[in-house]
Structure formats: C-alpha cells, structure tokens
Image 1 (cartoon, one colour):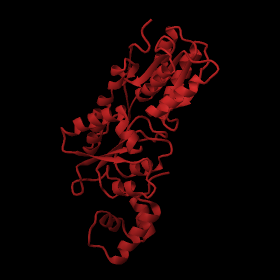
Image 2 (image 1 turned 180 degrees about the horizontal axis):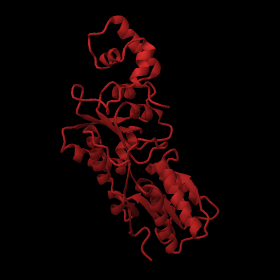
Image 3 (image 1 turned 90 degrees about the vertical axis):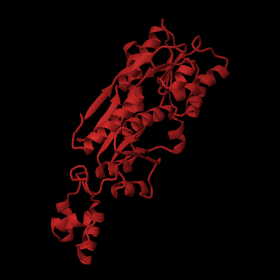
Image 4 (image 1 turned 180 degrees about the vertical axis):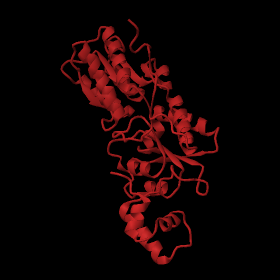
Amino acid sequence: MPRPTIEEVAALAGVSRSTVSRVVNGSSSVSAEALAAVQDAIAQLRYAPNRAARSLASRQTHAIGLVVPEDTTRFFGDPFLASVVAGISARLAESEYILNLLIASDDPDGKMTRFVRNGGVDAAIIVSHHASDSFVERIAEAVPVVFGGRPATVRENDIIVDVDNVTAARDAVAHLIAMGRRRIATITGTMSMSVSVDRRDGFLSALADAGLRPAGEIDGDFSEQGGAEAARLLLQRDERPDAIFVASDLMARGAVGVLRSAGLRVPDDVAIIGFDDSPLAEASDLTSVRQPMFTQGEMLAGMVIDLLAGRRPDALTILPTELIVRGSAPAV
C-alpha cells in the first residue's frame, strides 16, 4: 500500500500543506481547530513523515534503533545476534550515533512502533524478522531502515545485507554427500523466516542433485532446546539419519548432545554440520558454515549512517560464506 502523503493529510483535514508541516514539526503557530483536524487526519491515514527525505537538523536524536523481533531469551542466547550487535556497536562507536536496542517478539500495544514513529530514533536496523512481524513494516514506513537478512516481503526501496544462504547450505550438504552419507536430514530454523526457507532450499537442492531424498526435516526454532528435541525426533524414525545439516550452531550443539546421550558417535555414526561458525563451533569441534557476522553488523551500521547523510547504499549486498571443516564432519 502506498505511503500516505502530506498532501492527502492536508486534503482530509481541510487545511494547507504548510499547516500540516507546522503540526508535524511541532510548531505552536497553529489554531486549536486546525491542530485537531490535522491530528485526526494523521490518525485516520496512519501518516508518518518521511524523515529520510527531509532535514533532520532540528529533530535529530543521534540514535539508531536496532529492532529485533524476538524474545529476550533468544536475543541474549544467540551467538549470531551477539556477533552482529558487536559489529554494529563497533561501527557506531566511530560515529556520532548511539545504539538503542528495541527487542520484542511482538508489539501488541504499539509501544515500540509509536516510539519510532514519534521520532525516538533517526533510523533503524532490523534483524531476525519473521513473516508475521507486521509492526516491522510500520517502522520501515516511518524512518530509514536497513535489513540484516532478507525480509519475508521485499519492497522496492529496501536495503538488505545478507549471505547466499541457499548456496551455503547446498555446499554444506554436498560435503556430507562427498563423505559418503546418504541418509541426510536437516534441522531447520523457524520457517516463518526467509533465512530458514533458503537454507532448507539449499539442503533439498543438494540432495536432488545427488538423487537422494531427505531423511527428515524438523523445525528446531533456532534454539539449543529446539535442536535437541528435533534430534530426538529424528532418532525415532524407522531409518536413522547418518548425517544432519543443522541451520545454526546453537541448534547443532543441542543435537550433538542428544546424539551422544543416545550412545551414537559423531561423526562415525552421524555427521553434523552447523551454520554461523560461532565461537561455540570451534569449542565443540563442529563443522560449520562461516558467515561474517561481525562484518555484517559493521556494514549495517555504515549503511544507516550513509542513508542519514543522504547517500543511498546498494539495494542488496551479499557477503561471502565458507565451510569450516572440523571433526563433526571431517574432510574426505
């Protein structure tokens, strides 16, 4: 749906464009009647000023919002998010901006949305978004935004920093196939997220290229507990997998614990590959797809700074990945 314009607000309120502008900018030189009419029109149309297109000199907060549509347990426990935030913080430390964390799995009362739309931050970085996160769209209508990872619905002017999750997953599964594994399952992330869909697509593509069928697909919701439960379910299948591609290191750690508790050897009985190459992958000798999480955070912050300075970054930036081979799925 097109963003309402200031002219539409003025027409609905029965006032001039300049009157609407004065209301939006907090001027006191507006009659009570005109103020009420404009505020009513703004509410009806859900109008938000395009702060990217106007001067921020008088209203700049020097704050960047990091919007993470997750609960706090996921945010503080996920090594991917920790690395991205570290990169964002490092880049902003070199600038005049500070970072505001806006963490919520939902925004039912509109508090977060109102904070952003009322000028709480100058721009936003949005990561870990789901297809159901409608409040993210309202935030993106109000301030300049950059997305870490592809949103469920990509709009014409969206700016995205991502990795090629399909190719990365396909290469990881191809490595398992080269090891001689034929009963390969996957533990996916939350399927309402584009990243999970893409990694599953890469998994299926590699199997199809080799003429193999999946040995199981279970959603592990990007948590260690979810990865553990998914592994338990896979072990209950009539034909146990001999390899599992797991869409994050955190889920992979949960899966490995279950396999070892069941008396299975990794990688002899079941080979495992994770995704992220977070510090816990090296600590647990886990083969993993390395994505440049810290660098992604730095780039996200740099692009937001560019937007606020009137410089438009490329619409899509794809960062490289690399399969880091360790003991859980060793080289052939």
